[in-house]
Length: 388
Image (cartoon, rainbow, N blue to C red; front, side, top):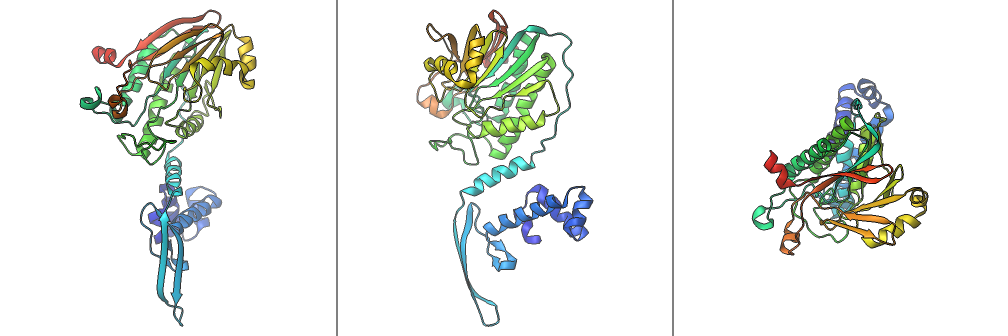
């Protein structure tokens, strides 16, 4: 099984080592305390992966394809004694390998349910605090000499956790806290540092595997802060145009990690529009990449899955991002206040060279169940630096 080790994941390597030590798949499974099926499937997955790269000794395939390529076919000429006289190996660029590597990265991440945090002793039932962080672009690289401000993974991590902590500390003891990741939390969406739809190259600070791990770490840190502050916590991971797939797997991962904590609700909506009803207050969410702000009230009022919620609400507040700029607009006939939130992140080279300027900030907005917006806490990076 030596040839499989090069193509095996960390978990598959553990199974291979156990088989080599104990002799059979059944014995390996018993030693590891897992089902024999799990071991069989792991070995099969590694075998298929190796074969795709041109390595399957039992089929006389011993010429590995280069990284990023897969074998599309082989032609082997055998001699009279069955020996190989010549072999032609055809390769092609492997588009599916990028997806496979992403899945392997996620499979190797330990989705262990976290310890349950005790609820706060004081909470005000009538209040709900919304913490919105939009267009954060974790993994982006920006150089101050070019863009005006530095931005990398270390800066972003500190900014996300620090800003969330300050917003939590400055907000009332609301019974409910909502962590609203309003789209484009990740700067790119796969192993290639490009935008998902237009395939524009972006300035990346790190490798995607590290980005996967750090994204979960910082969101979990923010959730912990909310759990200490609020009796109930809701998490929204909105789809953005930079992280169409990323928003999905982050949402699924967080759902698994907090499966034991009954105080957390993960909005698992398979739809780029989201809503929450707090008493007589409806909160709507959309990144802003699909529908313009002025059209959102009509969408939330007419969409079947939100129509009942809209009818029950006296006030509706719809939150968007996408343009990295703040904008609050009362739609006189739309029946809602639509607010576009600013971003905490720096500009990238594209925005800087294009002359795009935006105020960097994040808001924590507290709503009363009967009277609407009650209080607002605003955090800016410059203010945070002065307070440090």
